[in-house]
Image (tube, rainbow, N blue to C red):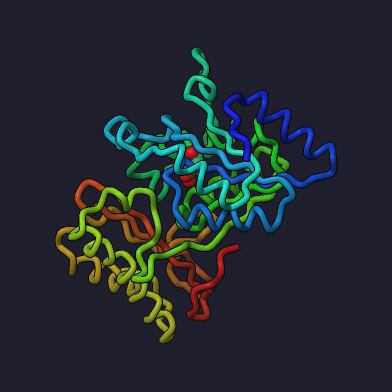
Length: 289
Ligand code: PAF
């Protein structure tokens, strides 16, 4: 596996591969890799001829009081994990490479970027869509792989790709969970053993909604109350939102019969965690698109 640090080099390598008739698969990450990321790399490996993973902790998607400086960074370990998955290239740019002095252009998906996480993290999705646009322009992939865990991010990236005619196919991969149900996240590393147990309430709340939906409850207001009641059982966990929304436009739905995204965000100590399930409307969690 080769490590690339310059955007020019990454573009040249991708261009060469595509000219040779190879399909380029791209996995954008912020590093601190876990099995969730590796599942994206494995899917990319299965679907593309050349796999490029980026590891870049993107400063523009962190708010001024968020965890940019303490976000876990271990590029050597990440590179070893990627090499073991037979990733072909890891793109590890510096902040200056991605944001040269004087850069003033933003990409923003208006409306969607202010919903769910965007409500409590102003500017977050603008940072995500700006860096993902830049990465797409640098790597010019045929396919890009994203995790369903960031469900709002998925909706926003899909909208951006459609609105701006990016020539890339977005592939969404299922959430990878620990054996007790906790969704894998780089931020789980912040949790102490007590908080690790408390964090399970997010999954329990989602499973409560799933069970009720399986039994035929389709009223979103009642499902939301049931999920919020489970969240309230863990007083150490401070909910940010518990929402039942349309998975594309992220607006609340009154009824889940046509399918819905059930998304939760909460603070465990100072660590903000998110999780979600997708209801098909027939009472079963569907595989993500
Ligand atoms: O999902 C992430 O890890 C980040 O938001 C992404 C897509 C790599 C952009 O920095």
